[in-house]
Length: 291
Length: 263
Image 1 (tube, rainbow over the protein chains, first blue to last red):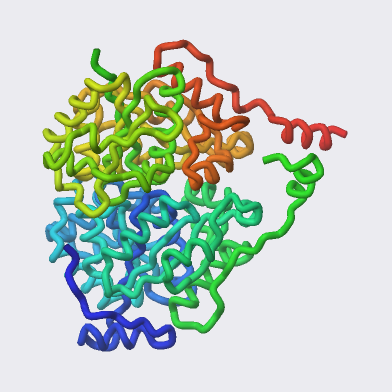
Image 2: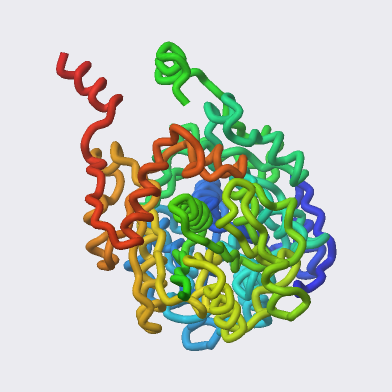
């Protein structure tokens, strides 16, 4: 199913040099990282958008590739939907040059989006051409982040084919953990998958009504990049097309910046989400433990 | 008499298809109907987990289609309701292990054994989606009030319309406080964009997380806030005219905060 690749050892301090060494290409080749999960709606696209912004903010040249042909959304999250003129399939079918299809971000001149085709099907993508396209992007960019569609069909195969590394996004739900575990199995011994646990509600974990970070990772046992809290802000940011990582002052924005720093090889601890008793919790226990 | 064959679909993943399938199915069973839930998410099955039946799986949908067992052998009866059963998806196979025609025949066979066959569709619009809708004669489109989910739902509605499958809409995970503050699309906004008949509005409630993880559908429990909402959806599905709850009215805490502000 998946092409077998050399095990890719992502050393945190020198991953870029490693990337170049493993592929035997010049040292300047960027890192292609697929963001995947198996289950839908766990936050793959949100993660891709925010890590793209956070890495661009650090000065890196970043390309975001929406691999969800037929159900694209990365353009909406980046607020670029009205600027998309060409898409991945136009490039693969050589209707336009790659550089014509790349949409420059509104906020960062070093951040670009390659949109998915909306009115086409995933099985129209040629897997080998997709691999070549990602390689071409790696020549121009420090990071190529590939937003993988939900599921493990052709869309998944085409999203991972050009990547050397994987970030798997999971939520603290048994169904998501099971799907992620399956995807990690499909990735095999390649891609050095690292984990982001998304949508954690600390007060629910505290009450024993949600799986904890430890619960999730006792099953998955993956290197943890970081933990992101569940916040209504995310919905607003999605609807507005303004990724939270554009800011630096909120806890979630900071968490994305820390994860980006870790991806870039900085030795900083993984961001976690801590439980703090809120006014509503106190009120709740005062009223006699509402569920 | 043949069962109604209803697919639950959305395009986008994680909007609540499986949760809705299980709770609508359980609520129908509670009303005395014979219900079969079919998990078509081959390779990423989850319906069994949400009902807490994962340890009882012996055969799966692909094995039935390949003729390795009888349908009746693969159906797993729910622990709580005799009249509720699931047909689990295969976990270690691919979605292209079966064809649309095979799926349509299987759903037809199940329809002879039940009053309702609910088909839980995988995310996306690839082969798994085409298989899931192949045997259905009605659809419930599930969405959330987010631009990305609505765009995906719109795409799925187009695909269902191509096949002339009648469809109705469930809007899941509404947060009335965010709608009021203008941070979330309202029911009217969503209905205007998608313009299909509304079947239900489900507020975002934390109780769904815990009940899902425990494999206990909340419609079968006591004291859950969302139980009544699912029961109304099921009654609408059966043709009753039930008015929609006005979620814009402030709840207890809203009134409390309002009173504090006014004071």
